[in-house]
Length: 327
Ligand code: BGC
Image 1 (cartoon, protein in one colour):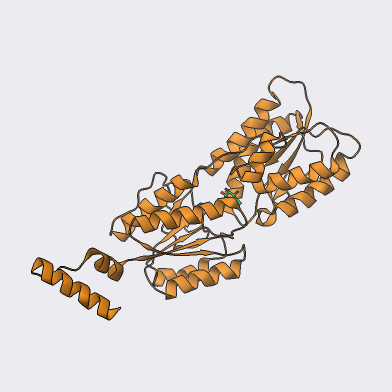
Image 2 (cartoon, rainbow, N blue to C red):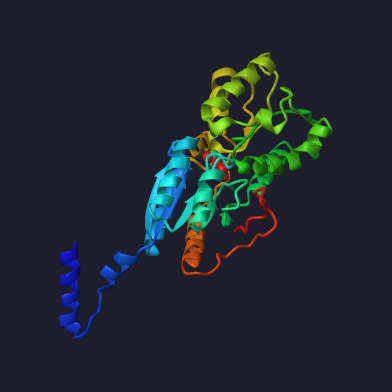
């Protein structure tokens, strides 16, 4: 390695008559390393997020330490610790549980390593410098509006039966998705036009740990056998994302014989797109993770060059230590 650099220097000197370090050598010497950690490889979207971030950061001239944490919190904590100790200059973190990174991120703060919370807000840590995400509340609103419009709730007599399935309680996004949808649907529930036959309506009860397909499926199995096994029609299932929609669909296929309900989702994962084509899922929300990655790369670049990252929301996302400037 040393010999290579010397000969490159000599070569440059001979040709140009002065010491010109070849670009490749200069870059390799001071390339900054960005640590990127994603929650899991299980879902299509996080694989795409990781791949997009890695490719676009490399293109912008950075080295990338990309890790996936198998939805295991201690794994993610130790990956972040390694990134801090191995000299990463900045961290981009899509957390598994927004509340579990406070301690490890104190180390990042001590070393002045800026942190961008990627897609999911990291809670109760003042080490979070920026947050980049989609408009999660609007995702929920769109799902709620879809159900409202398809059932024509403002005109049809009803009542219609609905069940509710949202995401991981440790993922701050789940509250935004669910909140957005329920702000549309709650007035119809209050008016008796929408009926949640299971009676399961509060966030903690309708949450799905780890956004797991299997967990959503078994909860739906129980709901169907208790409320819809006698032929009662289920008109709609609000599912906050595609992995939970898949579980609900699997359960309905195995247990439900009535007319197929409306099922919502988000991410446009491949199995769900197939289900939409075959009529088993009604809609999904496509969030282009390439755009999120390119925006986050712009943020990283701005900070690494000593500036401030572009943001467009300084009011919505309070992580418990104050509002985090967000894009
Ligand atoms: C993301 C969704 C995703 C879910 C499960 C959320 O934080 O915003 O796109 O479906 O996590 O991975």
